[in-house]
Length: 284
Image (cartoon, rainbow, N blue to C red):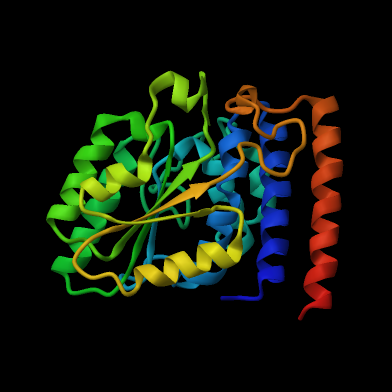
């Protein structure tokens, strides 16, 4: 794993960028973007074999954001990796921008699969993984699902498919922040026990803290030794992680901060970024 202080710095910047982009847009989904930010950071800045110079390399790893409304996190990672200028983020969700409210593989550099309708992204990830097997490729396919998303029946069809075809090149993360647009996932449509359900479908399962880079790294590395079945990493996370008034607040599932709210969020995120930069420098 890269130095965890470096990853913390990258994650702090990613959160800063995505919240600024949402404020510029005046709409979007901050809560679930912030909760999966550390997972996205780890994948794009440590784990995945990807680069803008080889955006169409058939041997590259693939990433599918099944919870497509969290695209501000993905777009920020892609911009930071150099797929497009960071300034493009300020055009998020505008009619003149390619950065739509959900990922578009046709128009956005670095996006491997168009997603948005919940439940469908993981199915696409299964297809990409199966194609890799058929083509004799060594690439891995990573996908992130929301805990509200796994209320969709198609997710469990995909889970059955992945186990049936022994897709050990597929690694799914469940962003288990406990909240969805209508409130507590356990009250809306209880998806638990998430780990036992995936186990019953034949998956290799791990449960971790989704904001701990060492835990994420160890869990992902554990999947390398798994043969003959797909892997899922259930990540306990905090909705709105990094912005005090958004944390654990379902009201921030699908709205952007106004000017006053953004001023508070920007100050908190900037301070967190400055601290992370200093700690990364001190621990090089």
